[in-house]
Image: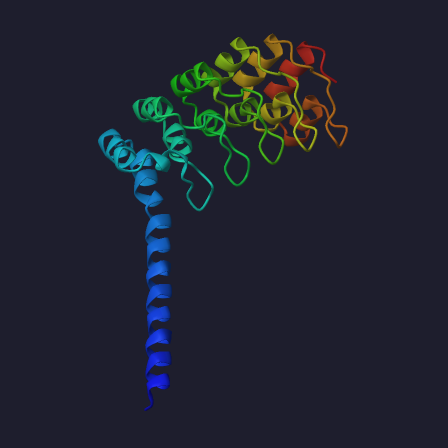
Length: 223
């Protein structure tokens, strides 16, 4: 083998080694967001603090679903972890791949104390996900009465429509969430608002056979 072949062979092998090394480093750095997400989801305050101390940029790292550590801590109701993340300047209005903010996820699972904390740190109470749902939509659908009370007290948009034209009252009626329907009606929800199919909350509840919800809507003038 001549000198040129030896040089070319060495060069190509060196390039391959560099490429492999870069791939490994990229994989390791991208995968490192995994541990802090797991710790946030599990409510392990000490681990979250340790990861942030070693790499502050992990505060805004996202997992495969586009969730930040704050999303996961909020979803699971870990208030102390949420406090730590917010103190380290986590983006309170960050959105995941389907447009959910930490507030959406806290509302979905009924963590009123976390929601209050997020709102104190200027979370957008009227932010919409990719389906046009606000946190109030999600709380209403899931029957999270305490969250609904809190959001109503914060003067959120009560009659906001999602992409299907449904208001929070539509979703509560469709899910047979009688207590939430009562709260929304007491808050002056538009009882006869029509969605994209021109169905009012009463029509939605009647089609599903929810008599108690239908009767309550009728008391408020529902048609």
